[in-house]
Image 1: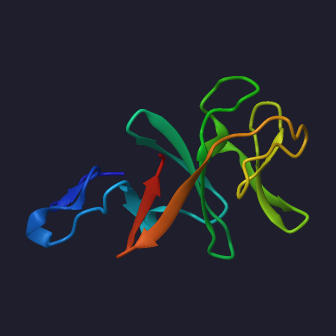
Image 2: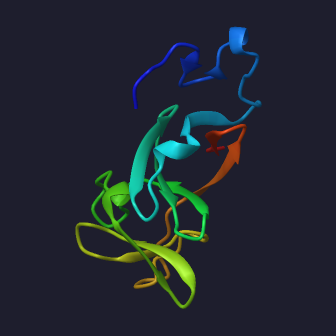
Length: 129
């Protein structure tokens, strides 16, 4: 995503534009930057986050690190659903993760962190702590 006048990745719109991110939330992109059923990666502090927008308008944020391989690839996974729940399949070994709970549906003893995500004032914000 490219920088524009008035835009900063850490604080959203600059003071001149009159908008800043709420404490604990980090602006990662604009609403229109996410494509339905395609992942995007964002670096929030030192945490790699995988962001997803589902066709029903749901926003989801999980850790980008595949717990089976240690690679930061979940944002490149295949988005789908299982039992009515939104999922992403790792692009490496195809383990499927529930985007709402972070649980691996192929091995429920394995999970990925799930982060807060919201759309506010036309911007997507993530909370990792």
